[in-house]
Structures are given as structure tokens and as C-alpha cells.
Image (cartoon, rainbow over all chains, first blue to last red; front, side, top):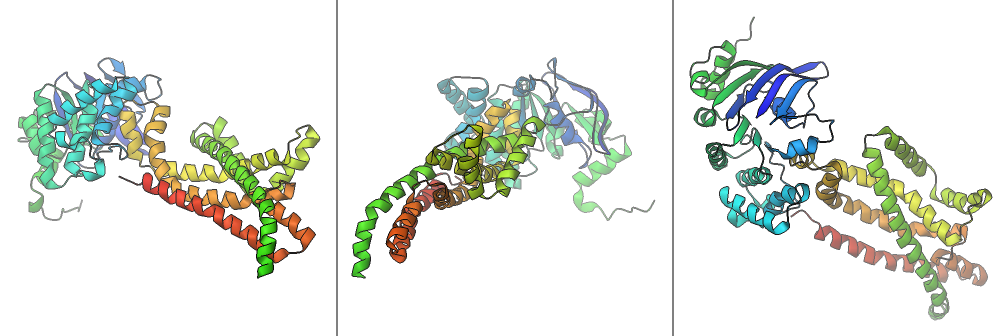
Length: 252
Length: 217
């Protein structure tokens, strides 16, 4: 479904992606984990053309992702994206946010789009918030609306860019629950996350990225429990047991 | 004091006629400058040098030349190349063009102030550039640009007095004509000042109403 082949990207002199290749099969859930600056968000943003990759090939269900192409809009419409900071449209209600894409981009009639949007609101557990504006919602509620907004386009795959990193801890669970439901329904998902519990439970595969490269990949039961690479081990140690670490010895 | 009111009663009809012209000049030039300003702002932000370079040149030129000089140019110089405009039309076009630069910079600042994430969210649901601007960015920019827009509107109302320099018979010019024939400077210009002040009050009220209307939800 998602194919990434030898994709490289640099910002000026800084190389953020070094000839990265991976695929996500239909219905598969793949988590990208790794330290900040490892290139995982950039990789995700290249997949729907929010960043332009310098070389290599990205395709979604056979459609090539090319930010300069006239058809990039129709490729993006096929891929849902959920952002760390929600990015809901503040001048529209929750319902307005969800129907915006179907009505404006797909040309769906308003009535039908509204009905589908209400079903999505029900699915994310926010039926009573249809007429609320984003500023009247908690972070977790906003993120669930953002997921519903992406789903309203009936995407072939969903991209999640650290969807729970900006949330208050008590609202994280609701968002993860919606994501788990999606995964169980067979949605193809590529998820950048620091939620190792989610990765362990839901992901079919986990890719560990560091400095623009995939250092290790495998099913979560393997990669998270028995990491082979030393940097993977070090990263997992720090993420899973942040309290136990002493200041790292950076002597050579 | 009695004399003042007596004179005022005599002058007021003429001044109010002038005020009516002032309102027309201000309103028409505001409409023109708003449309031109938005066009210039979008051209400047297009990223295409074909649009960007002319927009920056025009904005810089308009801001660097006094409005009164621009008005004189349109009214006195353009006829020499065969463009003969009435004083009223020249005044409206002159003020409209001159102020478009200020509107353009205000619009541009407001558009830039909209969060980057809004563009990305709109792109991610497959929106095209024009759609994204119309549906997502401009409605949010509107809220940001309203307070300075109200300011510029009031400045335009007052600066419509510059059109008196090219013989547009608006309220300042009407005042000048009365004053020079009656020498009642104090009465005339007090009335003129009062008329401007009264005309600006509804604008201030309208602007705060608009700001409330489009306030962040």
C-alpha cells in the first residue's frame, strides 16, 4: 500500500533521510520509533508530500507521490494525516471540520456528508460535540475530531505524527483507543510514536530509526523485547525507564 | 456665540454637501484599495517572481511617494498622455491606489500570522491552493487584519481631504471656499473638524462590531 524506495532528503547540509526503504502492506500497522532528530516525522511527512524528498520513490497504492505534480492533491486526499498539534480549523465547528474535505474536495452533497460525519463523531465517542468549536474541546477531544476529519475522506491509509505527544496524560488513552479500533478494522497505518505500549499491542512491525536510517525492524515482540542493535537498546532503555538513568557518560 | 450659530446655520448646507462627496470618495476608494490591496498581497506571497517582483515594486513605490503627489500626478500629468479624468474619479483612483499598498501589507501580515499547521491540515485533506486560501486561511486572516483595517479606514476618511488639492468639492474644499470668501475661519474649520469627527464615529463602532462578530470562538 505504501512503498518507500531509497528515499533521501536533506535540509541544507543536514542529511535527515539516508536512502530509506520500507513498505507498509494493506491493513498493516507499522510504527516508526526513534530518538528526536532521527528523521521519523520527516519520513512520514514525505509520504503525503508535505515535505519534498530529494531522491528515491514514494508511492501509495500505485500512485507516485510527487509534490510538484498537479495530481498531488488527489494523492493526499487518499491518505489521512493526524498531526501532533491537531491543526483543527478553529473557525469551524467539529462537524464543520469533518465535512470540509468531503464537501469541498470530494464534492459530496452536504446532507450526506453531515450524516457520515455524525457517524464518525459517534465512532470517536464525541457525538455530543458536533457543534463545539475546537477551542471548547480538550486536547484529546480535538485529536479525536482530527482523526474523524481524516477518516471522512475515506483514506486508503492513515499517517499519524506523534498523535499523543501534545496531550495531557489523562486524555491519551481515548485517542489510543480510537487508533486501536481503526487498526482492528484493518486500516493501513503508519504511526510515528513514543507510545511503546501502543506499538507493542497494535503494531505488526516496528521500525527503529536513528540519524536518518532504519537501524532495526521487526515485530514488536522481537524488537521491543530483544533489540539487537545497541542504539535500539539504549533508546528503549531511556524511553521505557526514564527514571533509572544516570547522566550519560559522554567521554569517548 | 450667537454669531457662530447663525453662521453655522448658513454654512452647514454647503458643508454637508461637501461631506456627502467626502463619504463617496472615502467609500469608493476604500473599496478599490481593498480589492487592489488583496491582489497585491496575494501576488507578493505567490512565490512566483512574475507576480512577486511587480507587487513589491508597486508597494514600495506607492508607500514612498506622498499621496498628494500621486493625486496631482493622476489629475494633472495623465491628461498629457491622453488620460483625462474628472477630479472626482482621479481622487477616488488616486486614494484607492495609494492606500492599496497599506492594505496589501496589512493583509500579508495577517495571512502570514495564520499557523503553518493550518496549511498542512488543509493540504492533507487534498485541498488545492486556491481552495485552501478561500476556505481556511483567509477566514482566519480576516480576524487578525480587522483592527488595523479599521484604522486604515479612518485614515482614508480623513485623507480624502487631500482630494481638495485637485479641486474635488469635498468637505475640506467646501470649507476652504467658504472661509476664503467670508474670512470666518474659526467657524468654518471648527464645523469641518466636527463633521469629520462625527463621520469617523460610526466607522469606529462598525469596526468594533466586526471585531466582536469575527472574534475567536
